[in-house]
Length: 153
Image (cartoon, rainbow, N blue to C red; front, side):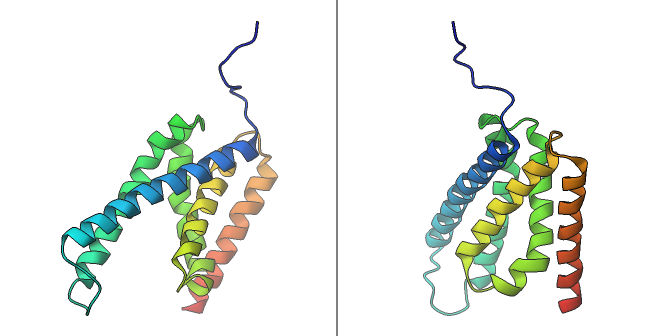
């Protein structure tokens, strides 16, 4: 007799793929909410009169996406979910200063890819089965990107 429960020992690559998928779903839902709220406020794109409201709404929805990631990661069986939910935004900030600010500035689609990659890296960094050496190399590369991004400013 076989169990219908999924294997609890999924590979680190599967955890990373699940985390990236959760990030995509969370961003899609919350950016849809942001778009709807901006449209309901009457901001149709002409001029700069709604720019402050739109930036505030987008920031709050990105914050909502980050907060809702813990629940999505638990639903996707990324265990433990809270280190991935905490590491994802931190890794994204490192990526944003290092790579995204320079290369992705005018392309919102690449920002979504960067956020998905950040949660995938967060899942790999939080997985104890990944060797400590690989985790330290990854953290070192992220810090180098951060320092390179800071010297750019």
